[in-house]
Length: 396
Image (tube, rainbow, N blue to C red):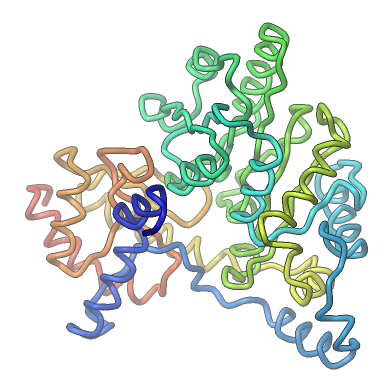
């Protein structure tokens, strides 16, 4: 018999994955062109051509045994140094290779740093709505996620609410910026207020509180919006990054952690994270992909494609009477359920072959998420279905 914890995970499943699988079933039944799947944040923009070229060149020019063999659990020193130099150039930081640990995507990185930091019973705060898997990642190590609601503050963190929720049990705060699922970007002014709260509570309670920046969407920001680099605002900041979105490589599982020297117990955290990478079974990040990142450090996907989708979908749905949060980043549209019931609303949408995800799975009841990292033509074809849905709810 499997473990009770895993049994619960199987029973509860993932609403996002369930909707994605439902989309595959409906596509087989009704034709792919007649199903409008906004469920999964799977990049629709292809990886830059330099990525494929680098893969071919690396595999042809590098000794096979060396290329595919083990390395330090933290990753290749050269790759880590290239990333450190890149970050220093972009953000005016002073990282070196030792501050970088290569990870199996952002998800792997989060599990590594949570394994490194958490004791059973520790609390991890997260601004809600948030990525659904945070609960599972934290629970993996005996911790508990404490949602800090933003719904009454325009989905922007309220420093006063945050301060009221920090206790002696608080070990970390996860910040996802740009945010999945809302598309909101937290500006510098808000980040500074959050940092002030954490510094105050550290001194008041005599504890270390780590701010974990989950940043897979950093490059996906629109209209000239700036995404602050959080290590510059708070000493106990750890950054988790993934190339899943910035290079459209979600299946390759490659990312990194940044652990600055300014951290409390920095040396222990850096050493502990490398051990955690090993004992969690990752051992090291994929060797070929580390070399690819090293070669493609200045490459990026065409964000204009997502921007085009964003503008058209937002404008189309608001014209139909839907209330939407205008996204500043990522590739998600956060839409209010007209009657407040996000589950019923997503079920109603399915009648018109629209696959959207209920917000309560993100700790954001009353809203639904649409991933617009899809073909533009699909968005155009889906508008009549949204019109029918709007009529059903008396919006148009």
